[in-house]
Length: 527
Image (cartoon, rainbow, N blue to C red; front, side, top):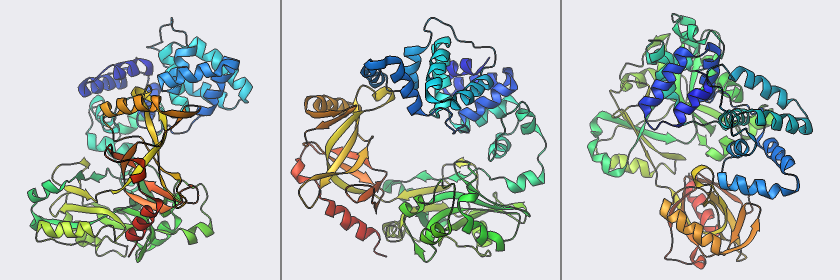
């Protein structure tokens, strides 16, 4: 059994149990290196794009010559670049190899192709695709371009590994956090006895909160919870051993080098310590918004000037290990007492007496540059995953604006035949519509189909796959934050914009003006 066979089993199954069974069989029966590389792909540890999507497009253009429009029509109908190329160029009559290992060879071929100049790359890639069966071509392209998805979660993969080798899932999860080496010995390492050095330097699985709606508030006993703000930053664990200091994101990435000032500040903390908290922009007494933090993300080089203009800090709200002792099974209130003894910026907490006091704190979150509140049971242990009844997150209601649809583009996947990606605009001071957001979600399937019919009938101009439409349709959008932006014509950038409803009761002239966002910005940061 190889990766192609596993993909076919996962792709055709709608049952979680069936997917788990397929993963277990694959791990137990496949070549060890094949299974290691597969786990890396399934858990999103192969993020490097060996072949960029633009190179794949240009290869198709070269093959179609003057008829590149035909490829664009095919791509528009299918909605996925890798699948389109697999349909067009793979050997549709061939049966895929499903027993012998393929991934190591594929990765080698991808690296070879990535080193070629475009002309040679396109020629060799087309030749290779023609030798593949459709599923092989599809997987090869997906894995090489960084867009592989197959509908299994990291948790399901961890569970399957644990069952395949008869190990406790919690141990597997802890061992798979951090660097993953995809080689023939990966399973043997997972089964090895746990060492103290291993425990000290690795991040621990995060405890996650369940969403709360106002009607659920009365079911919570206010005398047994503490409340703190839900900070708008990056969740991370700060780990200090006797020799190193590390920062790990919730996405299981080592982000230490991106935030040297946090590492420097942690030098005074005691060793053998793990803190759970948030990386935030600004300083504890002068918090900045998420847009300021974005400037620091994924930087290969952190300059002295950037450290001055966009400082960050770590705000802790839990202790998972202290003096080498794992205290996750202790009550939260005990862990908070331990945290209070450490010289680190901490998340202030309150102890409410009534549900109304929780509501009042939530309403003040925006002034504190927070997303809402976290409600945590005082006696809750720190466990892995999203456990019911431990922590809740109650986010602020989104900011809203009424915007006019000006451009539409077909979606991808199952929405490839529908114009579901919208560019929305508001009025500026000169009476012109300027784009303020792009939204891809929020409408029902029935509304999407109705809008698609309207868009096709009211297109005034086409720019490749993008249609400019008559400015008549209005949508209410919601968004979590707003910031000034020099890159956007409107001068603003919205965080997480999405459609809340289709405003068929108003016309384009009733849409909001850019000044509306200025007001929201002033209100948001009036601290």
